Length: 331
Image (cartoon, rainbow, N blue to C red; front, side):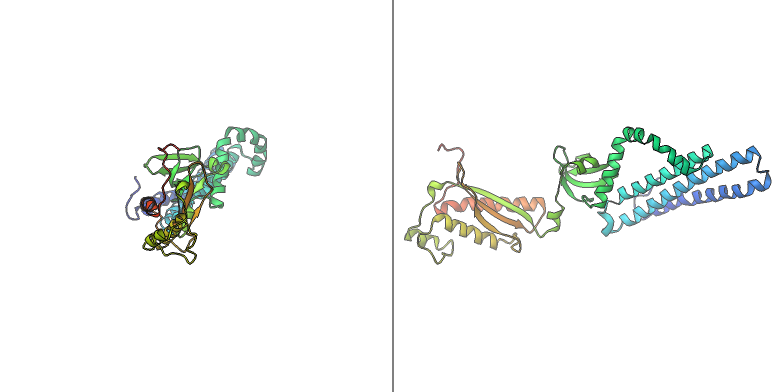
């Protein structure tokens, strides 16, 4: 029987799996009650039957709890407010606990010993188990850390240095995180690597009021000079001259023009820090940096806006008698 992909067919699918398990469990529990009434308790057949029934009931309870967890996961995952919560990892943790406890009970029934005594005896094998399942245990602990600290969610855009992961998280399990890159390739990253080393999560940018944009233009400092009255008159149509127009440079007017241009740009969120500043001079000129935030965080629109502002800034530099540093020219 295959799970339906449309509508709420998955609900019917899980409950079809659940009802017959409950029925079988009820029959087995009834057998435990009825068998001693038909045969003597000392009968070996009755003893084996009761032991088999106890094991079967334990296994059925484990599968019933697993189905209930699956139904709960599907119901919560269908709601928008829980869709980006790493529920899958939490469900897997609970399932592992159920399997562990159920396995201990089954082994205790087979050996006819108390589960508590069996758990005490497992302490001797802890070192061997931790060595054999080291990667699984690390992934288990890391998965808990990721979920409890809300370090990553489904839909987050993450970048993991040293790996090919640079895209959107599409699945978070107990020991792996699946990332769909911008070229639609799928990269699987161990959860342990996200906890043991640093990674970049762009969720903060996505939830903020804008995406940061920085544009650096290297100005050839040989073209920076004080403006003459004639130049000031020609620049008056491009920029509003400040009150201290005496001894003002063409570079300062260019900076004022860019600041006004950025503040008036419809795609820039001016409620966040916006400015045009100078960086430290280098051998390639004086960097003029445009620092602002794009209101639209979509990658394509963001890159188009950044290109548009860069092109405008480059085209306007000659109008102020400035020159952008050219790598092709000899100094």
